[in-house]
Amino acid sequence: MLSSIFRKLPAFKGKHSLARFLLKHDINEKSNVIVKGAQGLVYKLPNLKESIGFEIYVNGVYEPAHIRLLVNNIPTNGTLLDLGANIGSICIPVSKLRPDIKIIAVEASPKVFEYLRHNVEMNNCQNIYIENFALSDSDGHQVAFYSPDEKFGKGSMSPVFTKVPEYVSTITLDSLIDKFKVDSVGFIKIDVEGYEGLVFRGGIRLLSSTTAPPILFEFADWAENLAMNVKCGDSQRILLDFGYKIHRVGSPRRLDPVKEVQTSGSAIFLAIKGKF
Image 1 (cartoon, rainbow, N blue to C red):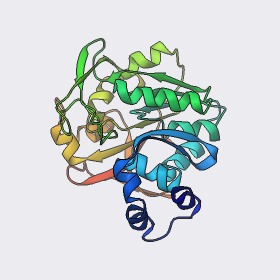
Image 2: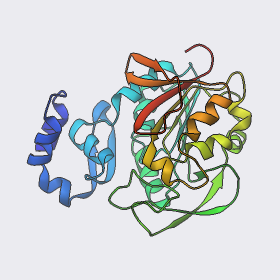
Image 3: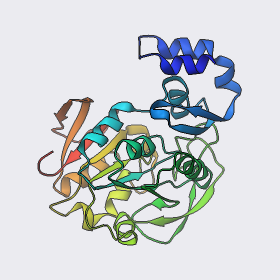
């Protein structure tokens, strides 16, 4: 199969453009695709139009640099919180590369959560614990969550790409820690489409601690501008108030200190307390 040949090829300039041309029919028409990716992992992909599905279909892995960063920096026998785990594209490879750690993976969309469950079970990831909640700054509320079928990686509590809601209960970061009786969190990876600030507000006890974990998160101005009860830049401001230092991830081996809150454009940030 042509797609399996692409997955064996190393990255090269124009690889994605060539794949979109040669695999156009698959990308436009296929859904619920089973793909064998890197490390022998198997994924069920809702579709191939969304970047997560496309990357795994063509490269066998999604965001390998972020996976390496997590794998190399989670403490031995530590705990990773994957907040906004989607179909498991990050937590599953991390699980296989770091069988010593515990991973708590949270996904808000009930329909996407079923893909997460399927992929975790299919890869026998016994160190991943999955939860279907919307992370927020308060517990136990039923909220509308909007997860578009085509752009399944863009779900949020704002009706950006679809007006059709799913309903899910909220949980705070601190309550999630209590639920699993976690003594120490080794790392947090979070991607909740502009609602990171709301999640951080619900983690006062964890994030204000002197032993608070590093946090890998994405900033996108359009997402935070559309998020309810969040101002653009709040995710950074709240972490700075908790005593974090924020760095822009420029490459797998380069971290650039952020001198002022970014309120336009997009970036991948790593927030750190103490040594890293």
